[in-house]
Image 1 (cartoon, one colour):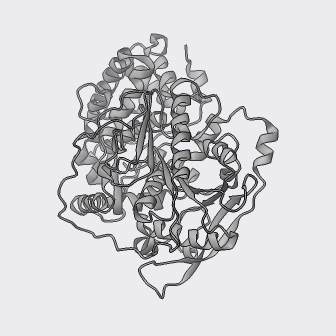
Image 2 (image 1 turned 135 degrees about the vertical axis):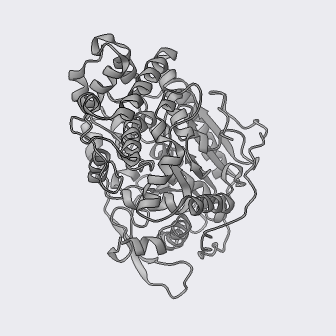
Length: 530
């Protein structure tokens, strides 16, 4: 039995804010996976220095653009000399850390040792210390923060690093997880001669205006860990919670710590979305730490924690977050905002990227077999109305839809036509529905769906068994094949980019099933959303 006393001690991971999916915290996943790494290995990680690419280009559309400093790290401890490969780790929406290139518990470093590869990692513009001209203003982000500019950064850095270390002719493999996995696949798409292949883990390459499939993924995780009984308990709890939110008043304050009366639609939407957001992190991070879908289900099924499921839900919420959680005047959830933004100052940058390119607004699912459909104030209509895309960046629903369509037109979405990419996903990952879960359009690319796995869990080799071990073997085989077949062009690809259109009239992206000959046998892929 999981008691409230134990729950108090659990950390609150990845709490999202204001309807936008949170930035994915690779450091948190790493800590969960490598919690019992030896102290000597931990100390050995901090052996590389922060380095700076001082000729990074601010605007790749402008040949006269200014330069800025971009941070990178590299590790040549395993490098076998001329002709040996280079593993390029692409950072996403988080701060770069030196241990990325030295972490012996990671799959990338493990394979680098086997292939005598040099490892280099590049920090994403506007994240961490890689801020062009130290200007993180909204005006600056609107001009220069986009996936296309980031991809051109990687291409420009590739040319610099190749010359700096005499790597002409060396085959490169790009690696990325979550958003960075998108970039890894897209880098191979847009600059095909610069990398022999790419690993794209948990990469939601299909931009989505309404990401209701996210909570359906969380639902799969709840059922996988605890069965239908868990869904039934949560369904009753969320249905009753909605009734409390409709009524407002003292019962909601006592049971769930609501600070205000919850009289406006904006208040009610923010509160229900806040309650839903507690499950975002649990759905993404699996069962490698105490705060997870399995433990919360066990808690909710135990009548000792409350007579009714809604009583247990309120007690659980107060245990993990004792403060009250009212929305403020801008519709931002106070509790989620203070926790998330204090822990990750890059949240504003990621919010802008989602509004400008990807969508990814998480809403309550309307599916029949999900407990979250009872949170009716967290409907797609309400979430879009009060999201920071609308309230902070003034990107309305029509513009956001156009941005999403433009992104899918630019890169292909589910139908991305790129060779030598392996797309890996956990079957229980809430992001999996926006990734590639069947044989990719290009027959030279591959996919693997890992039974029971969550977001980016294939990143680490520590304590993996069964389907994960089989999947990592498939990833290793793909990397070996990409290197074997590598052909490097003598002339690098151009590093100019085309500005992202704000509106488009693209045709809908097709989801016609493709042959599945390249799939791994670890599990059966789930269908992509339609």
